[in-house]
Length: 176
Image (cartoon, rainbow, N blue to C red; front, side):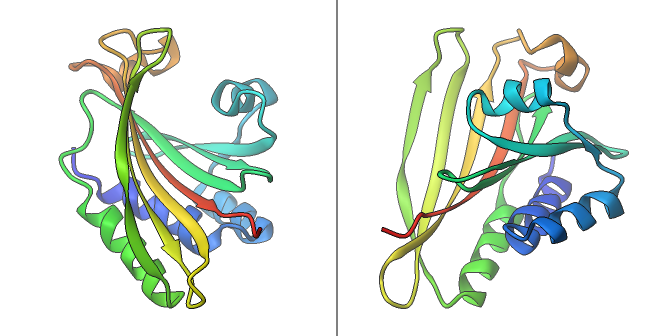
């Protein structure tokens, strides 16, 4: 699966509209996204405060979440059969954001792990510093491999594969 739509939605919601709540709400309305229920938000953000939307397109089902401070984060996720073929469009969107903000990008060492429920995580990220050298933003790709046991509500999107959720993240770094 190419990352075109996922990256395009990530750029629109998490790089262009975020953190402006009115811009996010307007974009969600324009795209026909539906607000997540409190239970759905809790399932995605656990104990962290926030809100979000779900969006169904002709090619996918997406969840967009906004995590409120102290971890001010925008993320878009989609369950896939086996992940995406590449993240070139995501990288291009992040690079455009960094350039527009006169930032400098540095990679963060990849991380891998397994959750107690057996889901394997692979995380790839980068950090942006502003013109003064202080960290301002982090960006990431999180792949969650469900090993053929995706949640029932996402089983259809995982059909034909092991079920890999692809999550694209943009987090604002709190000023110290």
